Image (cartoon, rainbow, N blue to C red):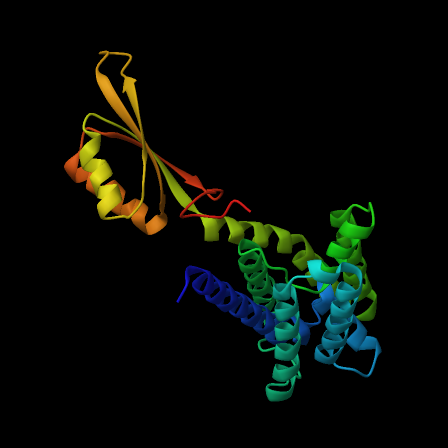
Length: 285
């Protein structure tokens, strides 16, 4: 199996996992509580309250209509991943609506359900963003606006989400509206936090006398690389070496423990970073 095929299989597996997370969060926690904090699913909640159609059906219709608009206005620039995500989410919500209809909330704790209604879709969005995929829905509107207008996309989408959330206050009750406002404010924060944690790596700056031992461990055991600088201590003017390397979290623990045992005089600075771009980490594109 070629590397390109492996990458494609991994990406579509992650997209499928992300879609499942979103479908579970929306169907079991967002729809039954009428939480309406933006996006196509928020529109579906609001419209289902004023029409005879279910939220799942409305979500399916809106997503399919947006896909058609995407093909009309974006043409070949309209990514296959976006189509796959939109269809998978729409079919998933429609399927769950028939297999496991939710007539009422799962629990009597709306705050607990709001947490799941925020976290699961936010984690889904973070996974999709991390592999360069779009979640469809209002993301399609953003892509169309970006290509065919000079409108500030972020502001436009926020205003749409805000309008949907305000509508919930009038269509449902004050409690549902306030919960929806909380969801709207927390959504972006949770997505950003999830993206940072998915990409979190450890950046090592190691000052030592014998770099070969450490570098051999990095190469042979951790299958990573490093960069060495020759340096000089300012107090004793001794010759020193500075090793720079980046590790995933599990590898970072191994490297830290190895240095503590085998090079106890080494000086280590370990920094969290979620933006490591290059071979072995995130791509340049």
